[in-house]
Length: 70
Image 1 (cartoon, rainbow, N blue to C red):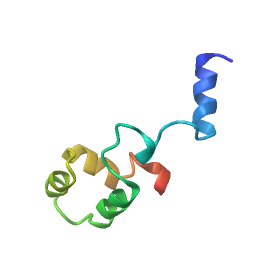
Image 2 (cartoon, rainbow, N blue to C red):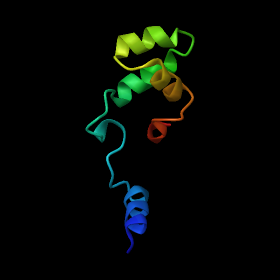
Image 3 (cartoon, rainbow, N blue to C red):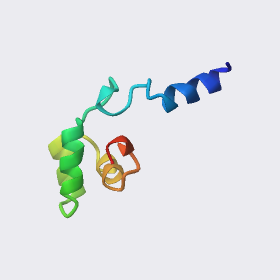
């Protein structure tokens, strides 16, 4: 197949590095669930606590990222 077809197949069969399996991930599934449970708290405070930027906290809480654990 084409490179695009191969990539699509890889994602469909979950053979890619996603979530905490990704070598660049700074968070675990447990931490993401904790962040989502703490929606009323300051995103800047959470970002500092977890060592990520505020935008990452926002995307986690709105499920723009880490969709795999919904």
